Amino acid sequence: MHTESNMTNSHTLKYPVEIIIQDNARYTVQSIDYPTCKSTCGTLMEATNSVRDQLEEITWEDSSKNGLISPSKLTKLKLSNDNSLLSEIEIVKRYSSVPKILYYYLEFSEDAIKMLTDPYIWFSNPKSFNDPFELPDVFESSWSVDEEWTDFRFVFEHRKNKLKVFKGFSDVKEAYLTLKFQKPDVLREVLELKISAFNETLNKTGVACFSRYYDNILMWSHYAKKHTGIVIGYDYNKFKNDNKNIPGSDVDYRHHPKKLKTGNYAGDIKDFIRTEYVSRKLFNKHPTWAYEQEYRLINAKGDGKYPIKQDYIAELYFGCNIDKNIKEALIAITDKLNLKTYSMEKTDSSVLTRKEYKKPAR
Image (spheres, rainbow, N blue to C red):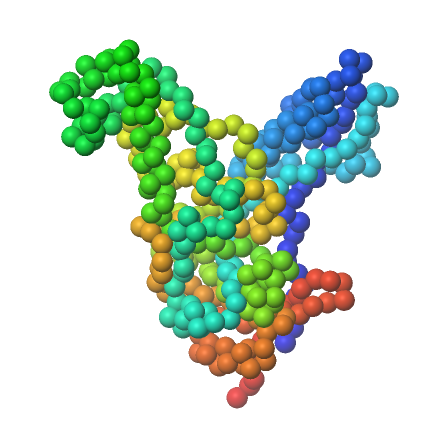
């Protein structure tokens, strides 16, 4: 056996900011590394939150282009005047690369054995998520005149014979003008049917949740039954090359103060599963979950078991508190599989390390 150091990196970045106390009892907060991220408000909290949102947005975009600016060192910075203070704003890290391995934490059970010997990925229905902040309301009901007409015409063409409101109308223009000027509330209800349809579609999708890291202490505690379970590492390159109909992405832990306009989704939406709406609904979580560094896969065909090839399983990890007999049984079960096996161990420095299991020479 040989020992490897832990792989978990900090899931946040701290960007330095200058806080300027104005003469009129207002506060200006400005990022040192991204000077355009600046805000002046009546309270320090408002200004800080505004700059944080700006930093999250600009670093997200830059890292998508492999251009993320690393935070400066506080000790090297100079303040612009005597009324300034130096501080920092913490934001969640954004990855610019796709993970090679996806890690799935679980407690030992019969299902765990089946996932190794008759491999599959489990996709959950998003309605079963345990976080009430998931599936947020991301739409703001807003249409331009052209968008309103496009959406109304779309609903009329597809639901004409199913909605009572369209009874008696044979012409879409007549129906639209009648509702717009005589029953605007009903018109809005018709337009918002698409939002309901979007949500209905999402409720029929499946979501599989993984982590970028195998040595997350909290996840071993929460999902692998106090470090007595296992972690399965899947070769994501192989999976995504063979399953192009299953999109995946890092979870977005930004605050997203701005909502999406419904009018931006007027008419027939192509490739619905890859829209920003779906990203906001299914790939967005509250910032307090950022320690998980979650990566999700979406199956538009629904939840349940999704069979995969055996060689997608690349690694297997045993928790530091796993029962010895269970560990030996799993080693025997996976003996003929082409995967790397590791044991997690605690160190004096309060971190987890992995030791690779080497099969005895025969």
